[in-house]
Amino acid sequence: MEFALSEEQGELASTVRGLLEKRADSAAVRASSVSESGHDETLWATLCEQIGVAALGVPEEYDGVGATFFETAVVLEELGRSLAPSPLLATTVATQALLAGGNEDAKARLLPRIAAGEIATITLGNAPVLDGDRASIVLAVFGDELVEVVDSQATWTESMDQSIRLARLDLTAATTVPLGDGQAAARRAELVGAASVAALAVGLSDRALAMTLAYVKERVQFGRPIGSFQAIKHRLADVFAQTELARSASWAASYALADDATDPAEADFLTRTAASYAVEAAQLAASECVQLHGGIAITWEHDAHLVFKRAHALGQLFGAPHRHRAAVEL
Image (tube, rainbow, N blue to C red; front, side, top):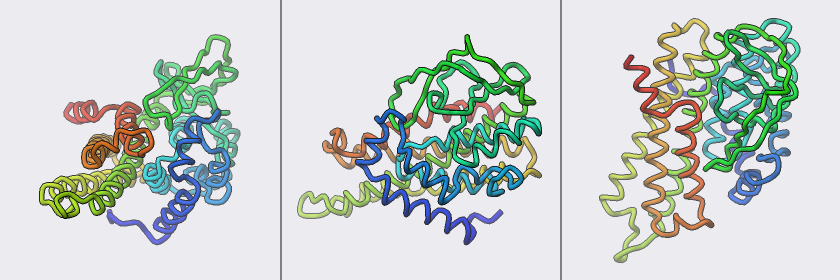
């Protein structure tokens, strides 16, 4: 395993980052988070049509790019850095669940739609569903069966991080279409969800560290930039070290999930390790970002609160860090 991006992966990251820097600044992120759709629909269309982010993990025979999950994780890391609300997380998890458990007819019918940019999601229980109120393709696991849910009633659910869209689904009047193996789909969805959260958390840690570094170089106390004080250096060095450890763990998990030859037990271990490391690194980076910015960080106008909310929201989506560690210990 080589802990470095290939030339193509590096170009993918650079392209996505450049687009997000132009189209997902602070004002755009705030506006899209509270919009009716919960995301910038024009930006999502651009990401899908010009870069193919939704098609990356879809095989070529289903009109996809035919890349691996690792390439999608590269994009997710950039989205985590930008804080841009996006349906890519939900769509990625649903795509991977369908690939793992769906029958051939289901894949041939649904995957080309996902590759073209339709939003997809999956529900695995009674918890709120990512993008449940804006997804045109809704999957569910009922017992041992993977199904498509048609005509469900979705109700938006308020969350601490407005840039992560959640909804509750009422399946009372819905109809279902059998698609395949629910157990295989659920296992893949849980692992890919945790690895995707890890990638988002690594990007978020980078964002928080960059914001804080820029501030401590400018903020002057006692005639010196506060970044020159040894205590500040030590704290930011800890954040940097934790971020790099988290990135290594995240890449290891993404590589494992991208390789069909990886032992399932090893993939589970690496994914849970990555989710635990990365989410806690993001929470540390967010905490230091708030504390080292001082009073300005708790104002609505500053982006520090967006970083703080995202860091803690990520820890709730596919398992808190302590739960991943407990599962590994077992």
